[in-house]
Length: 502
Image 1: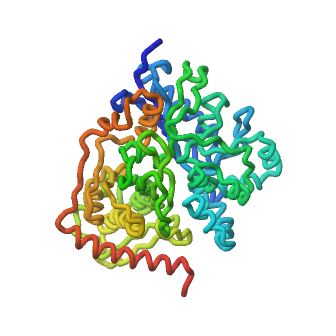
Image 2 (image 1 turned 30 degrees about the vertical axis):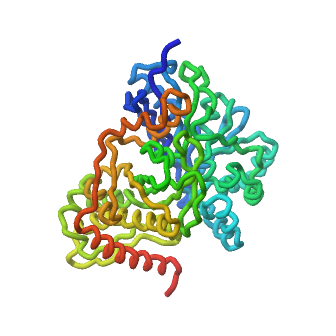
Image 3 (image 1 turned 60 degrees about the vertical axis):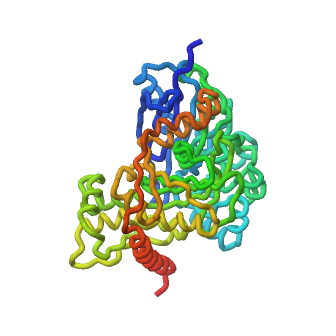
């Protein structure tokens, strides 16, 4: 038998799929990436074809193995990380999707969520799940699918259909239909999972009309999830690590204990603060969710969702033509002393943590005849830092959880100016590891720990390399006090606008 030489991580994201091969030290051997189509059938709708997701995953795994000159038999285990909340329904017997997946960005169930809040159901949802009644999560998406076709509901109740987030869909296909399972981190994002029970909540299933027969089994993130069907890649490799993308990134950073946090500065920004084995107090506007302990066991975290981060820079580039490339933003921001009084709140898709106001829209305040493009660009970068500081303050203030470290990843985290400004606004050190694919690395670490290929959860941290540390500068107190005050005035104005007040 060939000795195992590598771990395979499948990182299935919102716009593309990546396969990453790493060695026992967590160092990258090879990778491959492929985008797949996005479908927008209406202004408030975002869909994926599950078969297109599947095809992209198969393609990148084969490409990564070929680039590394490895065969499937050389793999110790497979880890999976995925876009969360995206909802898939498929036939249990054939594995064929029952229709397109409804993506986490989709807002078609906004009216249903508003009705739940008006009926006083959000308190019950919050108590059980740690989440809020928002279209972001899976339950109202699944409810919509089942109500859209009476035949689907009948088949679901008969046990002929499976529901899952993208991880469960991939596990079912990768194992040749033998396993229908998910992990605690993904289950906790559905509005159907009880944090206290660590299992599906029968009352919430009844509220959303979800037949229990279609739900996947919930397992710890480093548990066994079956084996790859041998005809796919040539060997029956065990699947031993599964986590939603944000929790996988936190695990990739080594954030497995209370007080450790990461912020992913991508299209949006997602801040996750580990709070330990027990559920902390509920904090207004902050989500409570599941994170991974050192060996993948389900623990707890607070999560903040900043709906627009890097997308604001993309808008300045593509919508206004102020940038030729996003990378130009760093030099432009550094080239001016301040924003010239401009505050930019890029609430293009509403406000997330801690406000959760879907009716809010983006705005720029403080424009004068002296405003230049550099001021707007700097204001967009500052917005990422202020929104992160506001979310983190909401998490740590009422809860009493102390921040031990904020680690940064995502495309915008390559911007040194942004991370220095973030450290100043927080009054706290920000750490950026040398490694870049933290989400995939987290899935690989979970697979390695679960399979025994790694001696312990700390072993692959060497792959993070020597981190870059951004300490608060001398101006941090002024930047924090004055900057956050201006930011909050601007956000208050947006909330006033969203209320429709005259």
